[in-house]
Image (cartoon, helix red, strand yellow):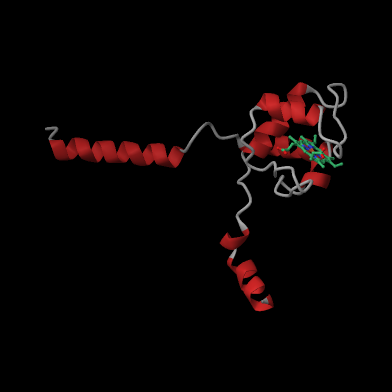
Length: 127
Ligand code: HEC
């Protein structure tokens, strides 16, 4: 018999499944690794650090967890500001660039400084 309590339980279980699955499709371990290898191959890591957590310049954003849509990400890679060298389509195909974008936008963004307890402790000790 399906009573109100049972359907609430089913609803709750469904909700948990949705929360656990999270937003959007996840990359398979293989495409995650392929994206990372391309990130290294084209040496994005040299200026944007490990998985894109660093800031390549004072005014640019870290690439990890970027919210840029592919078109904007691609435009900024092909026609960057004045410090990054441009990557033409001949040097870096759209396919590889898309794999890099898929990889880097799924990296968790860097935590804020005040969310890293040991850094807060060090800063307080310096004061
Ligand atoms: C030589 C250092 C260097 C390398 C290598 C490099 N970048 Fe950059 N990148 C920068 C700098 C510096 C900026 C800030 C804009 C500028 O001054 O050109 C930037 C900015 C960007 C931005 C815009 C970020 C924003 O929102 O502000 C994107 C997207 C980007 N880079 C993608 C890439 C990708 C993808 C690669 C590898 C294929 C790469 N970069 C390799 C130095 C680099």
